[in-house]
Length: 337
Image 1 (cartoon, rainbow, N blue to C red):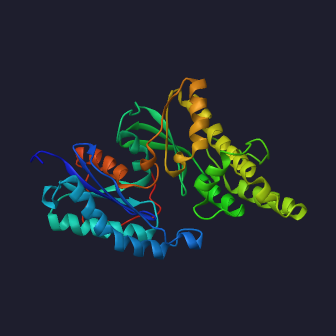
Image 2: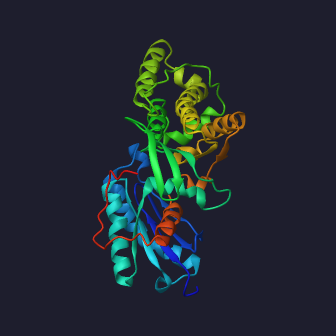
Image 3: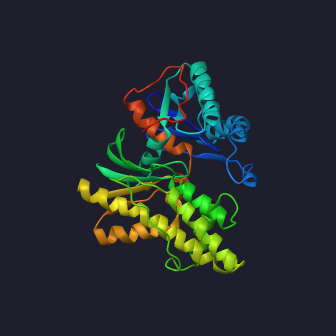
């Protein structure tokens, strides 16, 4: 690498994915991810187990990122790390390593907001959105409508007031007897079902905000009543149930998105976060965008879920602004965008 190259090692450890990525002059060279399978038998992420797995995975992941990029640690310009939001124990592992590594190399440390990075995943590869645009950021922990004016100038204009849509997918999937993580399995079964087979309530909140707690309760009572009459109801109607639940959740997301696009008078829209990998959301939003004349940006699947490439992309723009932090950095589990 040349002496003027900007080479950054980025680390992501906010939940249950241990990831490292190298970015050079704004180009992501790799995206190494170690997925934790230990949580499956518990039906959800166990924070203590997640932090232990990060400790085991982090150094091998960083080593692979450096070696496959062909970069030595002495060539690094900065170290970037997710500061939050996320699980405190998981964040501590990444932040502690990043601080120590940056201090040992005597290079700048960059803190990255995980939610900002999800939006900036759209700038890893072409096509890239034009400013301003609205990003629907949907994951297991967050559901936000973000007004994006520049790479580092974003404003949350609407968000869930209780559960995230990803949590609603996973918890309704659990009610159907699907193993964790249930969201992707619900999506898979939904492809074979009728989205209009069953009707579930659509919660409407003031302004551009969301609420997804109600649909879980609605599905719970609906299944209770049907199972009392027909013990094999879920098995006999699994595809239709999945399709109907997914249709309702996607409809709730897009109702507010349509309002936001009209209020802000723009035609550039993007989706980000783990739930943006959902095929029902992608298909429905793509059709809606065509009808409305919107330009839709959807990240590649590997950049939808938690990954260090998006952290690296955010870090690149922060490096250009010399936006560094001290080696006394502490993680913030509830960090706001």
